[in-house]
Length: 263
Image (cartoon, rainbow, N blue to C red; front, top):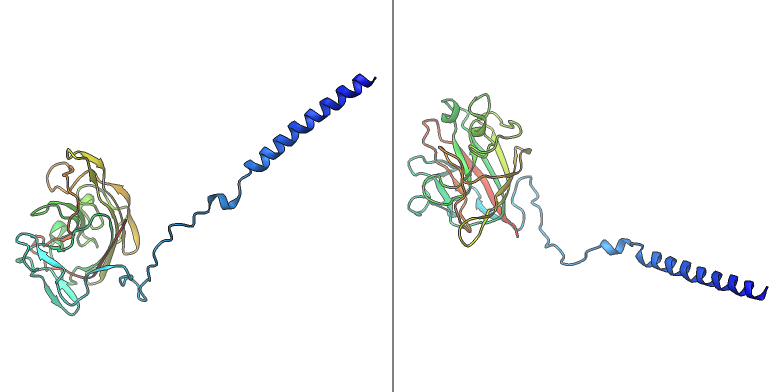
């Protein structure tokens, strides 16, 4: 009888020890909210502008309505020849396309533009310009977000306002009437390249057109081409370019252009 009692007590003790060990392990493994809290590094403070669409505290102001000091002609890198009046910058088609003196990689961009209320022409010949998110050479080399009159102006849809020219059709047509100011807000992730010039990671772009999402983290296939398929050409940083298109319609205008460099 004593032997059976001893065995029972021994088994009970082992069971207690095993149960306690599992209970302790369960307590140790149970997650706590603090386990997923990250405290460092603390993001920098950026003060929003008091007015809608105005540059925040860390923005690089590229055009504030006063002058074209941040811009040069694409062809000869001389001071930009576009006309500044009444707080806006109007395309000078004789002067040609302009680009920023600064070079950018990844950034947020805000641009406002206006097609003249008196605009004439049709299709691609009606208020044509472009925001080149990376100007990689002379002429129209780079990655173009199309600027065009998109209000009751039929054209090929991968060349309409809000498109990544010849690459991506906008999700919707968010164009306002000619004579009204329009807004692009862009997040640009530049492509990266291997040492041999081959593509490492593609470019991505998100675009809000008049506050409406029209390009949702679109993966670009390469730089803009008027004829042929897009392809990538190695670059590191590049200016932002505004196009002086060769159409015959009245020149359009820009205002309130600013960018924020992204890490």
